[in-house]
Length: 133
Figure (cartoon, rainbow, N blue to C red):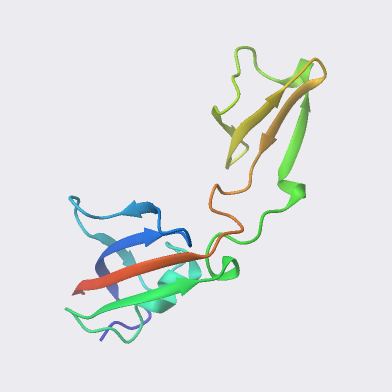
């Protein structure tokens, strides 16, 4: 049985409420992480606790247990003179340690969104525990 502190290996498939898949370990090595170390989103972390190797489960995570709610505070306007040249809408950039997406470029500056792309969405995961160390 997987417990906090164990290193686990899982296969998973993540979908949105409309049924579209946003991630999967299919065709790849299983995802490996240490339970309770914050290496994965909180709801995924807690979902594996108590599972035995070979167990499968489906869990739906609300935004608070996934990537959080979208917030306007994470949408930032950078004055044109402080923005690097050559940016394009849709481009991924780093804001300090946080990844962000360029969402608008105009005469005043550049607007970037540092919300996670899945913020504000409920996520459903099919999880299969394939290993516990």
